[in-house]
Length: 435
Image 1 (cartoon, rainbow, N blue to C red):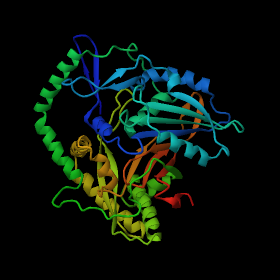
Image 2: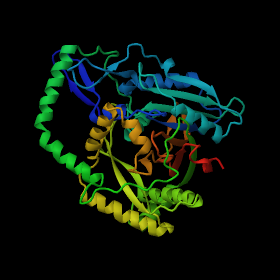
Image 3: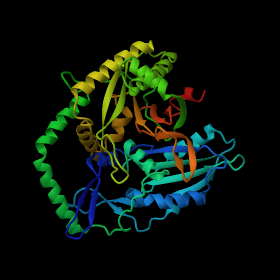
Image 4: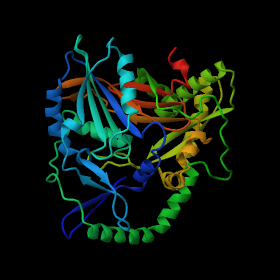
């Protein structure tokens, strides 16, 4: 999570990248960038035009300071990078329009979104882009929004969505652009931060040990996962497939087994993976799923950044879904009971990943890691349909791309009574997705 320290001497606000943000930057290696995003498909036809969207976003963006800031490195001895206002910011640099490829169906929209989210964002300007996709013949339209992960985690992304949509609070931000902090100011702030870190060392050590337990380092060293054909170094391409189910049905199933919606999701995605592997003649004893854990219950559009850890969930390769769900519920319930420090794994994991990056070994590590088989992100989205610029959003599709050797990952989001599961796969590793 980003740190903000007010500078009382010259009233310049210092907003630094937090430790988890630095981990995102250090691990942005590989053929796909560390981007997240969403597809907002509008209900009405015709949907909003480019001029309408520009007017709406111009009104809303001042409520989200990070959308007009860029991350700037600082001189030696001045601490972590800082977020500074971009005096050259223009909405035209970030919002463009594109025709919906023919035929104008969901497949073409998803292919376009996959290409968009896999394209690196320029780091000399605020780290986001949006594309209005319009079907000239039928009038359908959708908005694809992409953010670099350093700007926000999943919870922060939802806060950005809430601030951009109709009905969100219009907060008057500071005068834009604010001048960047001076080198002297940065050095003094960095010195204070180092002193505070020394004082907080006992707490940091306690959270570090808790983080190791969250990662599974307890009485026994975690076992390496079994290699599978779904775990190979991925390319720069991704293909999206989405299914939706009534959220009430999933919630009811979870409650009957004394579990959570996420337990049901992990059961479903591991069942799908096991089916693919068995069809390929592979029979692993278990699959290990990495599930992100947020260090905060909520956030706002003016407090973004990253504050997450991960929890590996070991899932036995049991064909029966009910039995597999029961085992998952037992494992996750025990983990929640014995791990009160949420997201504490971000500390030791981040330190290890940043060290590998400094040594130039992170790409090698993620391309051949045997810690997990896949990643599942699950967020609770708006319970009711939202509107953007007066147009109702019919569907909200999450976008997450992950570098490394996880050939298939899953992004899950509830919206307006539906639970959507987006399967994100490298088509060279999962050709079954195309069939």
